Length: 155
Image (cartoon, rainbow, N blue to C red; front, side, top):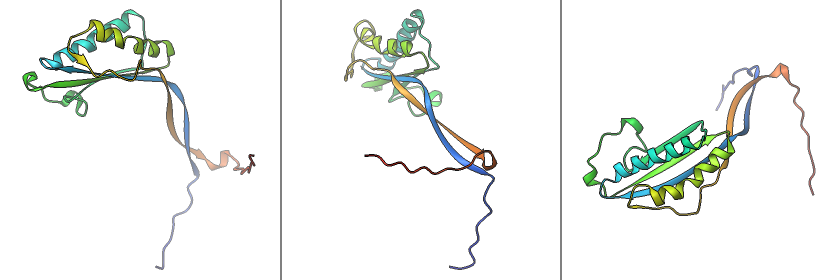
C-alpha cells in the first residue's frame, strides 16, 4: 500500500460524558384470552389513574403491548382479539422523583389483585427504581484545555 494520506487534525477533542439522570423502573404482566388486549389496555388506564391520583410525576411513562405494538407503536395494525391467546404488557417509567418511581413499583401488585382478570407472568418481586446513566457526546475546542496524563499506582 502506498500513497495513503490522512486529513488534518480537527480543532476539537471528541468527549463522551455520562451522568446520573434520574431513575427508571419496569414491570410486565401477561393477560390471557379472551380479550387479552382489552384487559391489558384497561390495566394501563387503571395504573395511570392510580399513579396520577397519588400525585406521582414522571418524565416518561411508556406502555407497550408485546405481541401487538411493542415494535411499531401507533403504526401497528388493529388486531382481532379472538385470535390472541395471550398478550404481555410492559410498563416503564422514568423521572427525577425517586418517590414517584418507587411508588410505581408498589402499584403493580394491587393492579394484579384488583385489576382485569386472567393476569399472570409477574415474577421477581416488586420493581425497584434504578439509576439512569445518560450519555452526552460533545466536541471540546482543543484550545480550551491542556491535556494531562496522570499515572496512578493502586495496591
